[in-house]
Image (cartoon, rainbow, N blue to C red; front, side, top):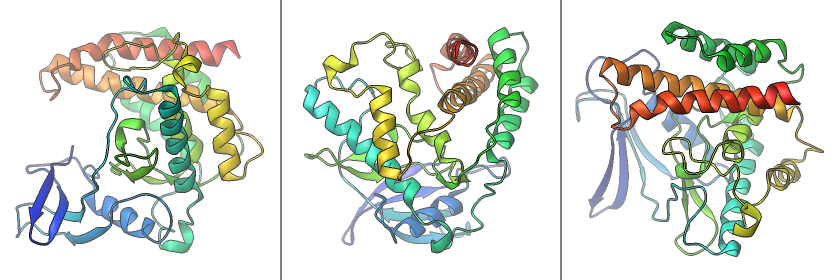
Length: 305
């Protein structure tokens, strides 16, 4: 959603990310927040590009922008990682797990991000936000969405923790080293804030609950992932817990159900924009079937445990 450019000059290779032109929704396209969190993370061991400059005016290129170092590497869009060996897939998933744990272990309060978000009641506010957006745009009853929304409101965990929440942590938003199973950069910080880290973890693990082969929400439910070298969900959670110093990952059914609801609400929004003729993606109409599948998966998980 923020135009991004690869720059080449005598000074080297860099990336410029800018706000789009025109009238924008307030709080959207917050590249100032992206620049701030990336700059703060440079003080730790989270793999992020080094930031170089931020311009908050329109006088240079028409909109505010920031510049950062270019990081070469590999980007994977298919979570099944076709063409790789089981050992290679296991390494990629372990590196992704390690990068997420490093992010959530980062001392955000001690590195100038104490006011970057409002961690108190983060989950309850997230549920209210996505439920409101879904209901405002909905024109037909989808029982799974209605039931799941009610269940989430009634089952918000009593405990809360706080970390930098990326908001869109998935394999497609990571750059891996060209040769090693190592994340060299986490991309796309537009949704980042301070909030419950298990929301990131559950979003990252939605592929375990989504069907393989879907053109929109590709997952690997029903696939023999052990034969492919991809860790089971339980093993992935155990590795994250070990890296973040937790005895276990609590309230997992709730957080996974929440991520599925949030994703279904977002997909529904894309579908509604497609029906109105103003969606940017050529595949936007496919979200109509997909959001119902995702909602059904979430309600099956919530009601079956």
